[in-house]
Amino acid sequence: MASNQAVTLLPDAGPLITLAYADALDLLLKPEWPVALVDMVLHEVTRSETPTSARIAEWTRTASIPVLETTIYHRYKQAGTASPVRKANLGELAIQEAMSDFGLTPDRTGVFLFEDHKIARASFLLPDSCRKVSTRAFLAFLEQQGLIDSAFEVERRAILAGRQFSQIRFPP
Image 1 (cartoon, rainbow, N blue to C red):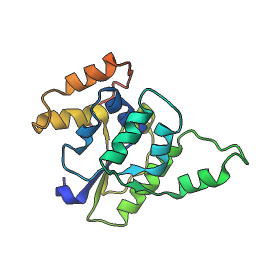
Image 2 (cartoon, helix red, strand yellow; image 1 turned 60 degrees about the vertical axis):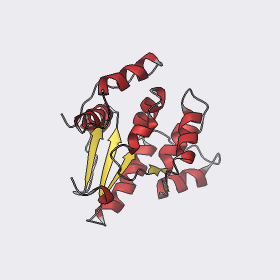
Image 3 (spheres, rainbow, N blue to C red; image 1 turned 180 degrees about the vertical axis):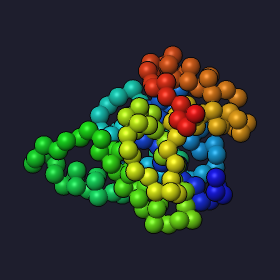
Image 4 (cartoon, rainbow, N blue to C red; image 1 turned 90 degrees about the vertical axis):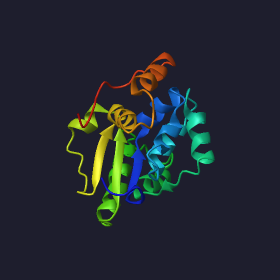
């Protein structure tokens, strides 16, 4: 993969929630790649009080994680309560929009971190400069690089805290 400066990690809601359950959001910073959150995804994981919403919001603030603005989120906010907006998949659409921007800057690589079988199977269009990686594959990468002791232990902590997450490993 490209140099650390050229890679940006963009987590979807699922990985944020799983890592928050494991009290391991800082693992996103381990490869020393810039991490950015897409505005719609941040909204999805913080709009309602959940076991992880405050933890994710606080981590985003304290780690100074930049938030990428998208037209998807802008239009969602514009619609407000005036018209019912279909909320399903808006985070993924906003990430796809952000990834398209990476395609316009060929010296940057976007790594889309996901945890949803639908995304693994779907024809989720990514520019050549972007990759999609499951949470488990990311944790395995961190372990292989010697950045964490055990990917399994992180998964175990999330499960013991109440998270049921996908068994997917992508890429294998």
